[in-house]
Image (cartoon, rainbow, N blue to C red; front, side):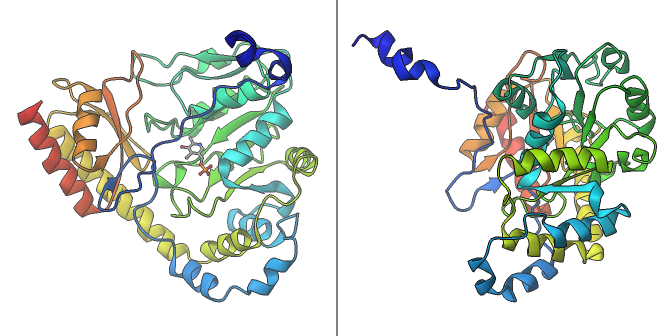
Length: 360
Ligand SMILES: *Cc1c(COP(=O)(O)O)cnc(C)c1O
C-alpha cells in the first residue's frame, strides 16, 4: 500500500475530516500560575461544597432526569422566565453545538466576527454550515452593518472573546432588528463581569437565544454546566435535537451542584465583584508597564506591549511558571490574553513581566 492510500484511501475516505478546536493548556505541574483559560481563581460557593458532601451515591444507579428538571426550574426562577424557556447542557460548548445544529440550517452563510471564540468555525465545519467571518473594525469592535446582509444566522459573544469588549444592548437590538428571519445567538460566557444581559430583550425578540455558562463566573468549569434561555419555541426545538442525539447529557451530580450554586447569590456577587476589582487594578498596573489594554468587561484582559512581541512575552512567562494565552494572527499576535487570578498571582505576573523587559 502506498503512503497516499494509507492516509486517505479505502475506508479512510469515509471519515469526517475536521480541524478541531484547540483548548488552552491544562499544565500538570504544581505551583504554576494559570491565567490562560479564563477559569475563576476562587472556589465555587460553599453551598456547592455542602451539596457535594450531602450527595447520595445511590442516586447514581439510575439515569438522571433527561429533562434536567431541578436545574432547569432553578435557572428559570433565577432569571424570572418559564421552565420551558431554559435548555441546559454539558457546558455552554454543548449548548452552543446544539444551537448550531438546531438553528443554522440555511443555505445562506451564518455570520460571526473574524476575531472571536474560535470554536464557532469549528462547529460550522463539523456541521457543514456555510459561514462568513466579519472583520472587526480597527478598534476591535463589531460593525452592526456587517450583520444586516442576508444570512443564515448570527452568533457572537458579548463581551467578545478574546477582546473582552462589550457591546451595549442598543447594539444587540440593532442586530436583532435587522435579523428577524434568522436566529441570533448571544454567547454571554462573560456577561457577569460587568455587562448588561440580552435577557432583557427576550420578551421582544422570539428569535433571540442567550447562552450562559457556570465555567467562568460560578467557578465550576470542571462540572460542565451551560444553558440557553430563549422563547419556548426555540427551546423546544433544541430539546428535540438533544433527544435525537443523547437524552442524558447532564449527570445527576451536575444537576444537583448546579442547582445548589444558584441559591447563593451573595457569594456569586462577592466573587464577581472581586474579579472586577482585580481587573481595574490590573489595567492600571499593566498600563504603567507600557501595555495597551482593551477596555475589558470580562474576567480577562487583552493587552499588547508596543515594545515587546506577544509570543516572546508569552514564552518568557511560561518559562517562569505563568501561563497566559497567546493567539497568533496578523492583528492579534501582539496581544496576550490574561485571565484575572488571585491578587497574589497577579503580583507575581507584574514582577515577572518587569524582569522580562530587562531580559528580552
Ligand atoms: C469559555 C467559553 C465558552 C465555553 O464555556 P463552557 O466551559 O463550555 O461552558 C463559550 N463561549 C465563550 C465565548 C467562552 O469564552
